[in-house]
Amino acid sequence: MENVKDTILKFARLIAGLFVCAVGMVMTINANLGLSPWDVFHHGLSKLTGLTLGRANIVTGLSIVILDIIFGERVGWGTILNMLLIGLFIDFLMFNKLIPIFDGFIPSIIMMVIGMFLIGIGCFLYIGVGFGSGPRDGLMVALVKKTKKSVRLIRSSLEVVSVAIGYILGGSVGIGTLIMAFTGGYFMQLAFKVTKFDVGAVEHRFIDDDIRFIKEKLLNKKQI
Image (cartoon, rainbow, N blue to C red; front, side, top):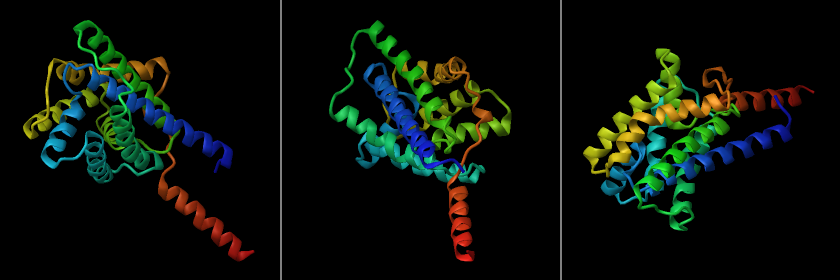
């Protein structure tokens, strides 16, 4: 087990990565070309339940955590913090209007592309610390491992499905949605390539590992 300082630095990087993901997501929303694939689903859920977009994100994350467990992905602190913090960061950024809303087509396209790339960078930051993937990325990682297919194919497939379900629930779909559904995986893979990040090579430390470690420490103290 690493020392306390290293653990604190990793948690700081994890939270920074989640914030970068949230910034990227809000940029794709404020590009005003149509919601991103997962946000179409979140928007549909929001309209159905009256939740904010951020809270709908949290509820969706919790549901996908359960699905991740079913697929054999273990839960880490990164999984839990992703589920909770990204939704809160999104609400914070949107309620305080910290990211501008664009109307011009070309500026909106540029903003959307930068947003997608930032989401990939955010994923590199927080997945790379090895504290477990977020709910949606955990599902992506599980499917990449099981199918041996590329990140681009798996991510794009998941996003197409989320758009379809979100649209049925009443979520807003635009041309930007289609662009993000079919190119989001490419920008994720590009971000990983730029940072030389191999998502399949990350060795994660999970919550059950920490519980086991604490139990062993307590048992050793009792024996002394």
